[in-house]
Length: 232
Image (cartoon, rainbow, N blue to C red; front, side, top):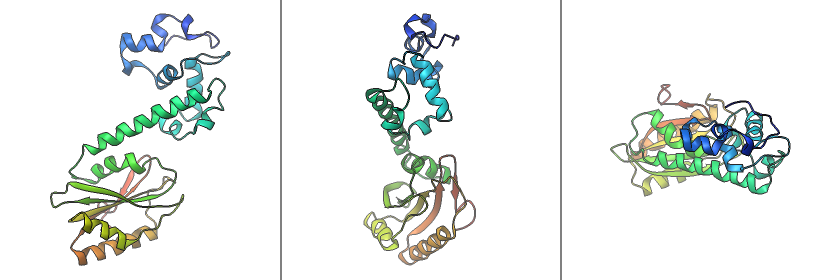
């Protein structure tokens, strides 16, 4: 995009540089994240255009949409030119994006690898600021028949009731399960508690003839698989 004076409104720009017109003429893929956000908010403030304002918002969030998606309405309103209505529009749009990703994940029904599990569960726990523990229940064809949020915890831990875990698995007639939980801290290293829990669940599963196929620790950027690392 050609450089424009920050104080000039978008309506004074050349047609090729206006986000809406650019989208119509060249396609949505050609727009930057800031330009797409600018379309949402419509206008900037007295000192900067909508695009310049959105570039500043992006920069303050390390140029990552996933970071902006975590911002509250109140946090976005700290930017001059972003009122409540504009902040709500941004929050709603990014939530739709998250839900779309969740719908895409539903299309994957058969688990062939740990990466499949990661892609499926990231939409649920990959970007949370607290820990959650989920179990995936599979049939004998390794197809997911049910997912269940077993517990929610704090920033560093969550409690798991093994009896409730297998009660849910049995109620779905699962022949195998996959354990998943997230680490908001971003660390992929399993804790001693993670290892002990995995061992207990595996032992209980052997008695009930329900195989524990894997346990994944999921973060925003990657995952750790107990099975891939030979810990199951």
